[in-house]
Image (cartoon, rainbow, N blue to C red):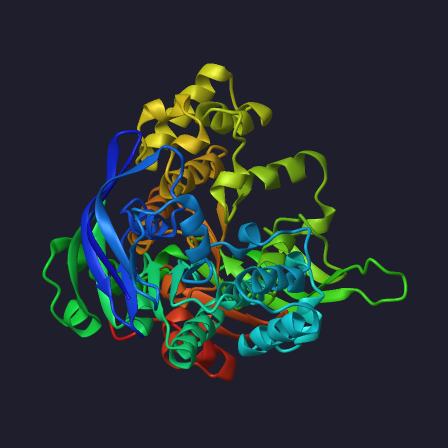
Length: 529
């Protein structure tokens, strides 16, 4: 279907992909694996003719079988590329929320693709849209057709994106990190859907991911990329049973490390809880006076002990983040009680509340959107120190310099802006910002979900070091049981706002009592690695 030879791409004269050669066979799923910056997405964008203006293809050929003959994708004009895009080669992008038009109904966006790439019009075109939505195994196709993207879940949006990609009956489908930020159960269903599509439509798929565990579930062959070069390729069985390149071995080792349970020092955990939650209910009010509000948390009780790492686990909508925000007193519970160090949280006022804000800090899921792009890193980290009057500007500067060193970032990072850092570096920055006030508790809300597996492993090591060095207590929110298993000593499994089960992470993840917990465990990719 596709034969790429000696592809070299440079950005403003700097090579980012060097001498890549590969072939894609009919009906094959070919996996591209590597860390961020390895050149995976650039290689696929080159086939689509979607490279940015400062990019240039310095050498190479890409022979694509159109069904009526071969064309070199690197040697055709823009109009020819436009005819191939969507009809010959289609692409599913990583983030459906930003790829879909927020001002258009999902059905209209699929209809647009159907009318662009086929001769169908009117009722027949809409019928084709409904067929595509049904094929995506969406429960209420008519409702999805009439919905805007923000009204759908992450998994539903991704299925709409796949429907748009299939509208032109492509011969090749490129899936660029399509499951990165999805729950494990949703991820598993999307992977199965792609395999079903391959079977039904007899199309070839290029699957791009940073996670070897994911690619082991879906691909026939694997291409391992590092710093713009192809370092190893072969069948899934060969790559995972007998990897040859040190980089491949390292990626596999990182994934294995995530599958190892944490060894918690129980003597460091104090018997008196720092948080005690009793039968709380949290409800979001309805926008309409004749509709009931939505109950996000129902009758939840637990305790968080000083020195432990407690994990909240569950799918999107299970109430994990709502529960975390309730503990931070960012939202109020309608009933029940939350005690912090023996005092009712809702009674804290004035200096007591300010002290609580210093002692309990939140690390957000997306570090880029939680940092002010107009402030340097030094300004962003010094701001809370100065606001809480912990010292003058010179004291703040010294504290920030020490924290940057603790999170393994150079001191000169203070003079740079957020966009100048990688995702993993930005996550280290927001951890440093949370530590500026010398807190007792860190609430980590899905802080590793969009990071490479290698970066995840590094961040977990950093969190463990900081915990030991600073005597921290963690509340760790995640949908990824591999991550939870490797850092949490105790786990609370949430489903639709209720606790399914709670207890030792080692016990729950090896001998779950709830069918729902077992479902989450079964959905973990690459368990055999």
